[in-house]
Picture (cartoon, rainbow, N blue to C red):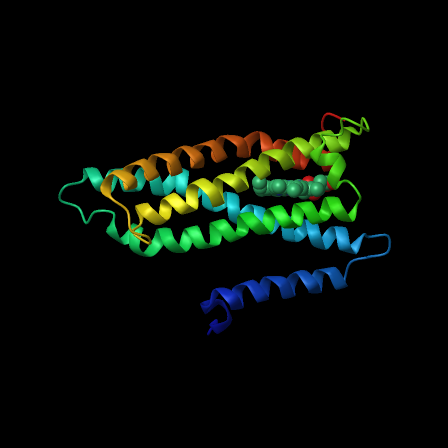
Length: 201
Ligand code: HEM
């Protein structure tokens, strides 16, 4: 069977969206908050893409590059640096931004944006405290992606010119920022899912 539709990533994504729309048609939508459902759907999709790639970097790419560097008779990590890392970083950084924007849009839509970023301290709203802790962690993580990881990775990958010393320093900063995000992702996700599922309330 020819599966032309799935040959391209755009066709694959569109197919998934179509299936979702078909399912939504068959669902009793009375009482559903369509805007909330749509925003959170986009938010979780973008979040999975972002954190999925973060975990790919930390669990797969970093140890693989180290192994390739140590393997003197092997092909080295050039293919990863040239073909894989730039594309992974492209999806990674834009998914990070979309995750933040859609998360903030959800809070804005429900009138909780200010309260969440104030951690519910003025209102005593425990939902705002829970989601606010996650939102602040996500904000720090977005900063790490755009301000620490991406500019330094551009030096490491040779997308911008840098001396060997600048590359080594950049690699260290990007690595530590990426590790920080991996660490923060664990409590961040606890707060994210917790806010809507009654944890700590
Ligand atoms: C750092 C990456 C992030 C990931 C992976 C992520 C992921 C998630 C997940 C899985 C949920 C659970 C949805 C549910 O339980 O129904 C969620 C909910 C939510 N997230 Fe995030 N999120 C991230 C960052 C952010 C940021 C930065 C903000 C705010 C600016 C935010 C705001 C929200 C809101 C408002 C909810 C809905 C909570 C509710 O059910 O009322 N998220 N997020």
